[in-house]
Length: 210
Image (cartoon, rainbow, N blue to C red; front, side, top):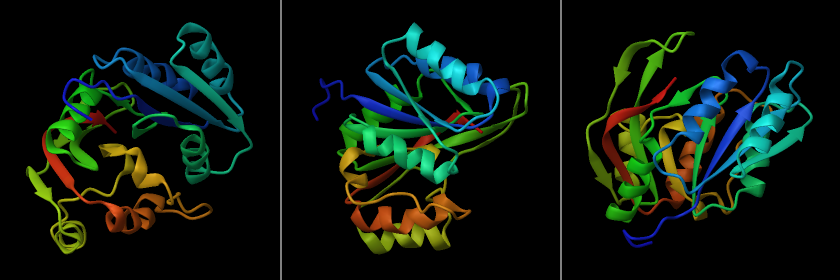
């Protein structure tokens, strides 16, 4: 990808009984300053209005795709999205979270400029009404050696565990899926991801609202 490219970004949103927060989440995606998006709303067997809301967003914006499936948990929902994602890059957002308007424009630019496989940014804790409580940022860094990445993850805590704080080039997930039926799914998958990552870049700022 060159800097003039506009790679398609697939954003996989796991949705389960989050009707109270879903509109805030989806609006933050639809209103991104970077517009070449594919928004995959994975309704993981919701029993509230979430599934119907997903269908309404699909009718509103052609960038939205909806997957309805039986409840299988967060990993299962993300894997269903990965199986159908068509983007050059992949991001994850949970249905009760939201993101800043320039998140994906900033991350795509960093992927291109640094020729990175993964770019990580910081995040903010928000309360139920979306008010920011605090901000977590990371020291800017670039890792090209596997040992450096694992040290930054396990020892220095510079590589953040959350799947949602990153943008990935699509080939990262060619042979990797989230472990289903277990908790701490982000922690379980990250060593596999780092094993196939050639360049991991951390940038400043905090764009994700958790």
